[in-house]
Length: 226
Image (cartoon, rainbow, N blue to C red; front, side):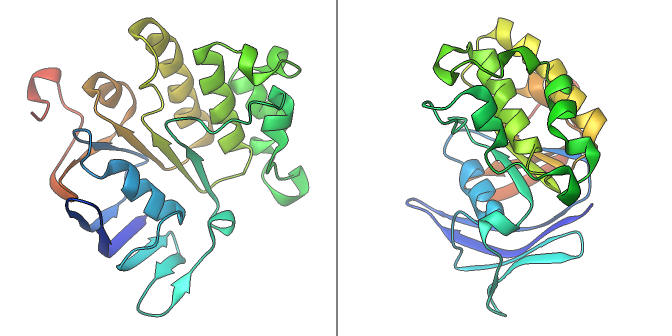
């Protein structure tokens, strides 16, 4: 599924995001240093920020067209979003977090059914536990499951492993690969860790100061951008 980002202009504090790109790969890394505008770009795609100008099209559906006055609300964009802080509700159980926004099987593919998603991410046994009693890796899996239960057409992942140490990262990466292969969703994966890019992504877009400066495959470590 294509994601078209045209005439994107979003002012930030020190610079403006200026993007014009078409994304066709299933898993595309948005790679760059902290403060490059990666999170702001995801927020814009998700409809959480209003641009100065933008044309955003996912498949055949136009999500934003400022010239035509089109702005699909966030809740209707069919986009799953896992932010850096995971945004889990600390006062709810795992199951209550998961069913928040969950679409019933009548409204969605069985692929995104509760039992199937919980099985893929191996969180069935966590359902009655409080979120505050989970490990970092368990919280990551619950956040991923909640995003999938919304039956998204696009998954946005904003540095999902940034808060984990290297040991936990190595345990969560296989789950991300499983999501990629099981659900076949297009994914935008924000990171500044080249090892994650190599493990999960098909294409890399390098973002610096709000602009894409390079496009490439994941490549070997020695060829990573500096």
